[in-house]
Amino acid sequence: MSKTALITGVTGQDGTYLARRLLALGYRVYGMVRRASLPNTARIDSLLARAQTGEIPFTLLSGDMTDSGGLHRILEIAEPDEVYNLAAQSHVRVSFDTPEYTADVDGLGPLRILDAIRTLGLTEKTRFYQASTSELFGKVCQTPQSETTPFHPRSPYASAKLFAYWTVINYREAYGMFASNGILFNHESPLRGETFITRKITRAAAQIKLGLIEKVAVGNLDAYRDWGHAADYVEGMRLILNAEKADDFVLATGETHSVRELTETAFRLAGFDLVWKGTGSDEKGIDRVGGKVLVEIDPTFFRPTEVDLLCGDATKARERLGWEPKHSFRDIVEEMFQADLAALS
Ligand code: NAP
Ligand code: F7E
Image (cartoon, rainbow, N blue to C red; front, side):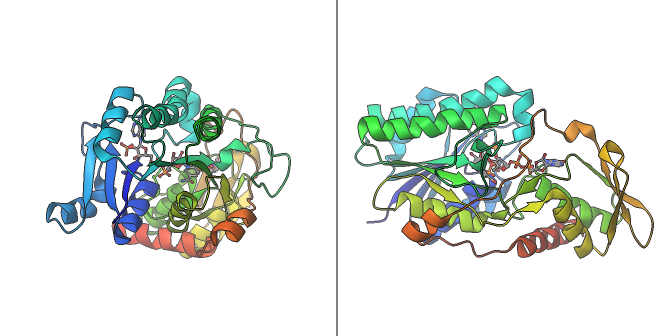
């Protein structure tokens, strides 16, 4: 008997990689989508085309993380073996502008799903995965960060995710639900949203190379992140839900790189050797050969409170799940840059 999965956030980066992976493994997949004035299914359109011919069992259901009744209805229709809760207002900077909405979607949303599972009597049948995040560590007190590192959220996004993290654990302890947190460090791909820093930089490097724009404006160049590949991380999600018992796992590469290094790497792929001149908001990345300013600072991209350094320790996932990331930092940046270059050419 094939398993049934429900993916919230199926139109996002991770939702798309996960849907592909589960369908390839023979799952029946339901994806929740929210109403938009223009189609928001670009990432999954090829899956939808295959579903239309009956090639794959993939069905979309309308719903929103802020709407308990709709979530209840979706769970009643899908009766899933596994729920992957990936839907979120996922942009940290934006969460400072929309704190209440972010708390509603990212904090209360998972609670609504967990409680619908419980009240529908699906507690024994349905396993629940929560997209928790390395942003929980925030102002880190130790490096690398693991499952035992204390949390210190630094944004409305992280505070909302902290509420969801503990809600998952509470439903596990109170009702015996199979509910697990994946504490995932940043993961990227050519499907990454264009306003996250990796995609913003690889896209800008491609645009500058093609003469479509002259320069790009960014925020804090000296933040460090542990960047992995989304394909590796969705496989980790599946392993977490198929483990012997519900538990919480860090997924990370164990390497950290700065935004500055990311920028230099992407621009090198585009044929530019960046040199940095100036300090603070006046700092500029200049092409060593042509002398043109290609990167500048725009303070509007700074965050009121920043997460300076993230670097994860995924020993527990490696030992208990056999999970190992396959992509290197350099390969990820190259894959993203080449995809942007091809799409823009
Ligand atoms: P993403 O590309 O921004 O996708 C977010 C998804 O959530 C989209 O499908 C979006 O729908 C949907 N969504 C947003 N608000 C919703 C609402 N009110 N109701 C229903 N759906 C809603 O994010 P991602 O990078 O794939 O990340 C997936 C999850 O992992 C998120 O929960 C994120 O917070 C978490 N996470 C991500 C990372 C990372 O590095 N990528 C790391 C740790 C944790 P639309 O397409 O209509 O906007
Ligand atoms: O920022 C700095 C910024 O927006 C990374 C989400 O998937 O991962 C993601 O959150 C760093 C930060 O990702 C710009 O200040 C500099 O230090 O790509 P980002 P994020 O905030 O780490 C975590 C794990 C999640 O859970 C989230 O959902 O880059 N930075 N200049 C900039 N960031 C952006 N976006 N734009 C800039 O111009």
